[in-house]
Length: 183
Image (tube, rainbow, N blue to C red; front, side, top):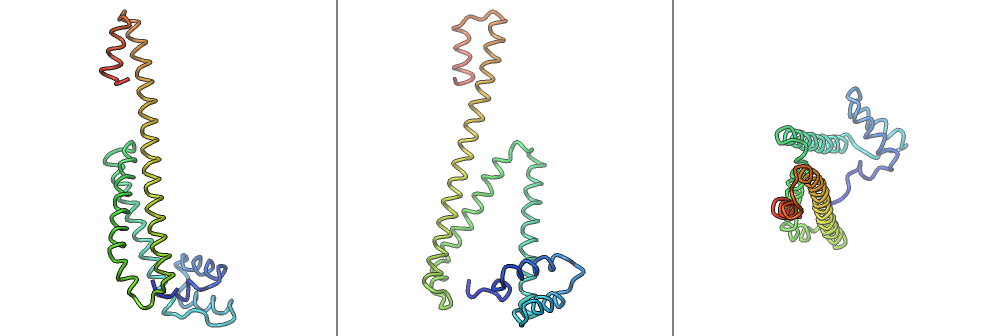
């Protein structure tokens, strides 16, 4: 949360070049440092800052891969129709992580390396993330409700067609719609 790393301070074009080179396994970190510093015309990054950044990116990539593997395993086990359940589980995990971060916020604010505006920015981002999470859950609930209503309408149409062809009267049809379909 302290200062930005030397890599994060690079101009966008150099940072993009660094990331592109980092993705090429044939290029060493030392070669990346030399290329970036040569293009900048001055030493902007060191080998140690490059290594720290590479480790951070590897950790992020590993976590992303693990999350994808877990999601794929969940979908394989429970079926793709349960994606919404997976989304709810993920939302809940994010919510727990945010609340853990909030519980540590006092320690973050007390850190002398963190300026007051940085702490406020962190808190704003946390609250914004929670708001967006709540909006996503609301949208998912609305979509689910819409899908259910469409499915019930389709079922009611089928029931009505079949009931009429079987000779059921309107009262029996209304009972079926009300008691069984909940319409």
